[in-house]
Image (cartoon, rainbow, N blue to C red; front, side):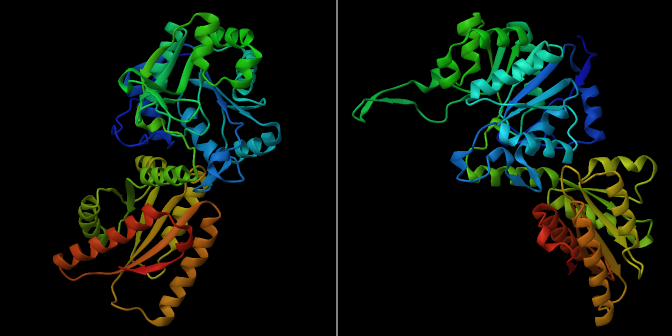
Length: 438
């Protein structure tokens, strides 16, 4: 079976950041980047994700691959990282038999398209073997990529290198430098010797294999391998004579192992989602002045602000690219534009995979609205926010008195930018419906 060439997106991640800035996001804008990069894969590639672990080291009752942050289980983020790679055909997720129903529900809820669920075995190697054998039932891929379900920030550029090297060499794997010296101990608990760290590397995931190599390795390996082994590259070498090509991987290959790692993963996703916002001016004349000073204020906070009069026509690309929207209004019925935006976001299912932030920015010509007016606006915003929250859309409000001179505009814009960036960065569902004064 052959597939048409598909282009691959390159990676410009900062070397010390444990995340791919675009890797955990999907959208129409991301798809076009495959075409510009120039690399392509012209052979079928599939993925096996072993996800049968119990997650004992996290100290949680729920296995870590099913632990949620920002409304989604960890394994869904990992699956998304592979689904966005257009040249990957199938993702086989191997889970314990008792979790097949849970995994199926996750696939349906988040509309994962390339995924097939397979029952795992009692050990890691048995589970991977089950996944490899399942791929052979529906047309064997040329290359199989094996990856941990709890490594959500897999880099597409690395996947490309692994896939190509596996096709050429038979096997390939990611490695990272050791961060600590490895020592051997005596039976009495004393130091025996230490290894020269510069000569050794940590074996990481992903790993890639020609299908015939990994299939043959599992057919030939022993019960001891199945029971106690963990290294797939070693099986390929021992039973097929295939010496794997080793490829330096980025820092983003870290694995969610402990409870604190879940918080770190959530922080990375939040940071990734918070790099830009789209200001919709609604063609209000006052919006032009405000937009100019807001762009400067957001820039000072290292955040990009795109300014659009609406999301019609060509501007619709911002709806598919951004995860944060600021809707400007100057009318008394100040939430009609926000309601329209919420309708569009819901119809496009924009918040299916990641929470979308919408901020209603009301530019008021009066210094202080009446108590009854403020209560009415607060109640209206809270009602909208409660409904939007059910769709994973986080709605907040900011009221800004229209300044009288340029200096006041700049001070006011900075306050708006600081409040908005904090709301966007924190993404706190407990604060939805709040109407804040800038």
